[in-house]
Image (tube, rainbow, N blue to C red; front, side, top):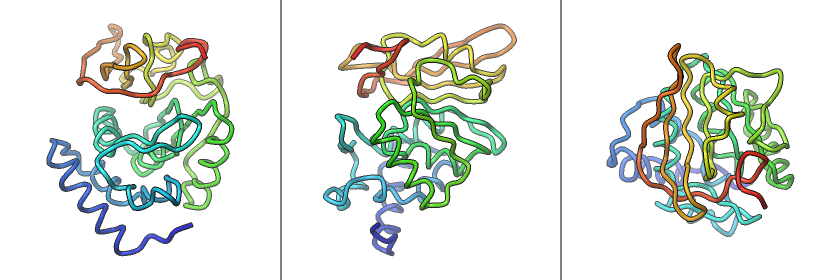
Length: 218
């Protein structure tokens, strides 16, 4: 594994200043997590020099690691608290789960592609991110025995909001999910209170497809 040198610390500081703070992300805890987690560990050796660029990168299996700003925007929208339990759908590289792990009590993350599940789990262990629980499964269905969750984040685009995810959201819980066509989505934020589910749109985005029983078919 490539070490976390002063060079990478500088690149993270520049990433946060120019790509994230400059675009309106203000949550101090989110900004600190983005400065702390070594993003270059979550890309291939061939792409390390591009790890802190203002764009997504391929991670294999036709999947991507999201643009840093999108990671920060979705994380801030969850309004996380230190004792929250968060469900992530689509572990991918593991970078989003790593950011979440610096902010909450426990992260539960699901990945449907075994090679990505295995690689991210090994990385979490090597970085000693021990509050991340990983599962190899279809993320569009329920995770029995762990629900409800204070927050849910979906890192792939869905044709519609999966009811299985809404049903796992605690009262007072927040969910962020891209919803739309396979090539373009809107980032939707849901909030659950005693009266039901409330939705708002954060803006346009583009993610890989959410594959699963309540998502797109392969």
